[in-house]
Image (cartoon, rainbow, N blue to C red; front, side, top):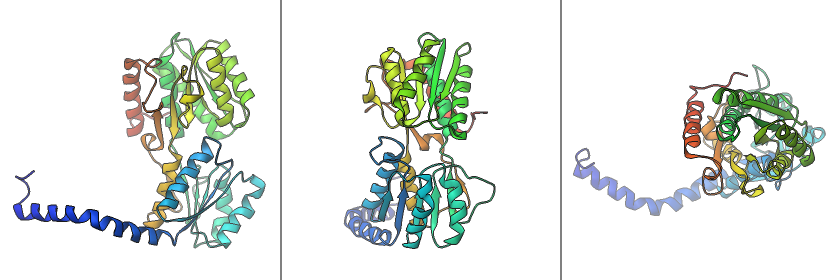
Length: 336
């Protein structure tokens, strides 16, 4: 290092480094003061205590509040309440309104033009080629995440006969995730069968358990879900049958520690933080769809580790890591 930096430059670097601790609080206070002028509202389809989709986004909102932003949220907003809730926050002068469900894609496309000075973010795909210039959408690498889960399920299957997916709401995203999971399982381990059931419900543990039990009866020995409460039922069904389960959205190790191989955590808190910061630093991409890579949008976790070493072999994990990296770089793309 010293060969590349002159003594004078090095002295300046040292002096700057010594000043940083003193300047940091001042800079932080200035940033927080600037952030406080930005008001962010988060509209959630469920409870902040749902342990998944809504709670993770709410955690991101709390982080923004700690960073000095003025925040508010509404829980369990039904589709019938969306229009009134969106307009209420816009009329109250909120800078950014985040709609955290599939339905906000079309709702914002209709309402946003009436509020050109407000930013809108829908945590779903862009609904069409054209959208208002003050609305941003996101593709949270759902297909890449589902493909990765299907590949891992196949790699850790003991019998090598079949693996299964349990979905929630009957929408295009869940259907595509099911296809990506099946495609990955069958491509990663030739001869294995990928199965899937989209239950049509995110909030019915009994349906999830029934779907998992049916696939287990047909030979599946690994179950992955993307179905919130319904998915918890699927995991409980897997544990009851003493087969492996893979969690989704949050770290679900504690659901059945002896049977959960890992969880695919969706980094929704990070997403909310990034959107809030983009408004503050004027990089918000209105009219566009954000495409974070699978490595940004998802994390594979199991408590303080990445996976349960009793259920995932080192060789299976190494093979999975290669697939994960290819998905993250874009070298491998699901075709569903």
